Length: 120
Image (tube, rainbow, N blue to C red; front, side, top):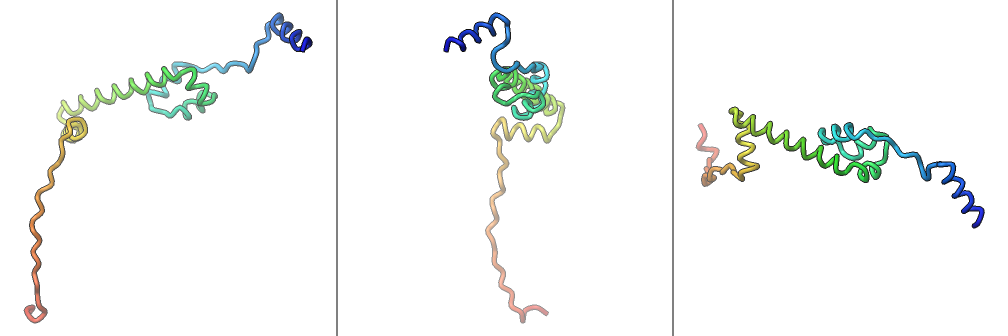
């Protein structure tokens, strides 16, 4: 026990860091990958760290990247619809405004009986 305490004190005096060496992760790279909606697993692999480390250190950056790209996509969709893109206007009206296509009432089905001796 006393020997263990002495070793700890020596490590503190020498200035050796405790635990594994911290991984350097580029915050700008994490943000950029998040704006492309990469998963946290993909971002972690590209940054060379674990998903846990990435989430612990950069959850706020990833969330901001996801939100910023959603905002840009919404702006592009609205610009497209307002500039006359009919397909985008229809899609937005259905998904954002709740419009629905009404199916025409089905016509009553009529059964026609044809006998073989009626055919010339």
